[in-house]
Image 1: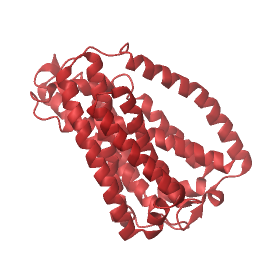
Image 2: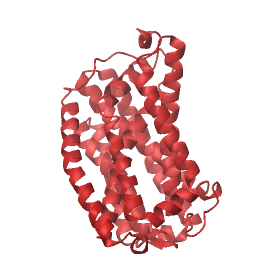
Image 3: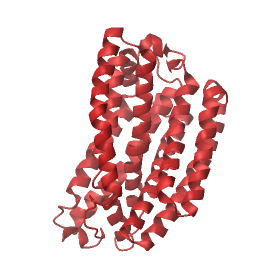
Image 4: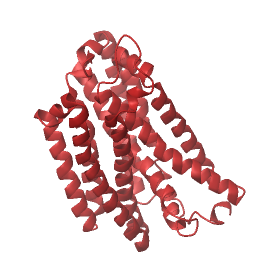
Length: 343
């Protein structure tokens, strides 16, 4: 049951990295779209693409938290005691981002609209950065057990900061691929070209960061590097690289539906690689999955409860995405910028 609980945790983390990461990445493109006039259509597509799904994708964060604090309470406690600063800042980012996105269309003045847009865009960048930094700190063995680690240095090391930047880049890549496909479906060739270029640039940047990350890990965390360059960790790294290259080829060919899947595999394999590289440890050098696990009755009850929940969640999300990709849930498109947001 420990293995099943760990697999469920990794699956949920991967789903959040892909789907939630794409949502955050859309905010990155909102931030970098340019001036109010020049970036108005791109920002309009961000809102149209995110509108039907942005709340649903965060269900995976809830699953992650539930599985962690019930199935692996010692690890959850140690992480929260040490990494409360980046996790708190990521939580604040989620709240500000959601509030700004929901209220953005209700702005009464240009100043209000721009302020809400800035909050949405900035929080979309800082949230994945802090989540990535926290994940990097865990992978780098910066979370001790028994007493809290340093609240600052634990997540500001080279591996953690690199993981934060990589989280932002991978989310931007996913979002650009998704929105290029959405733009094609909506019949906006100018936006297809714009997001195609963004997807190519972000994909190359994410690949360079992944390679650079291996060098950083090799210099700073030899144990983690060994895990990523041998066994299942190496398999995951190779799978991510191949999926990334396939994604770039599909993007060049304008084949957006398969590109969504290959890009998802590229990002998801990175998460799986980090986990398998440190197994059997949950907290490297401190706590194994076996030692961190709750008792069998708790594991069984949690697995049954979450399993029942997933029987509802997964088909519901599948239907939501199918309707969205068919264009049946698309809100009316309008550029966001200048005076459009207050009309």
